[in-house]
Length: 110
Image (cartoon, rainbow, N blue to C red; front, side):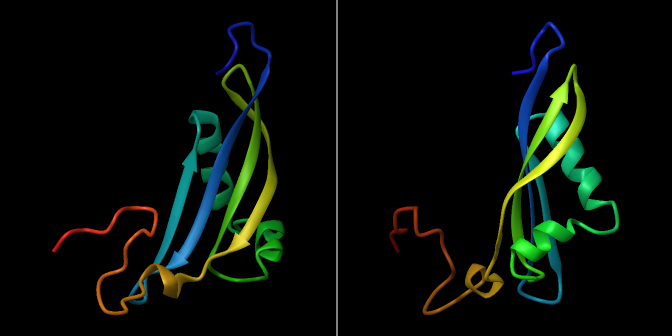
């Protein structure tokens, strides 16, 4: 939680990009609080998402990247890439005998 005395704090943000079932490309921007979302949107709209994240994800067009955002008094100061990994887009939309589902969820009764 941002401090009331104006001291520095950390937020976390995520940028994820992956291919849809057709020709579309999804871009997900998320953050723990406003400063992280703002920093992620700045990174995503800067023309190059993040050369460092792209390299760490094996130069794949589908990847996710987690950033730590340093902020002070509701002002983002800097974003630092913590980890980036490739995403297998085909597995998201995979239909093998039925619709794709989240394996962490219990099976749906039919």
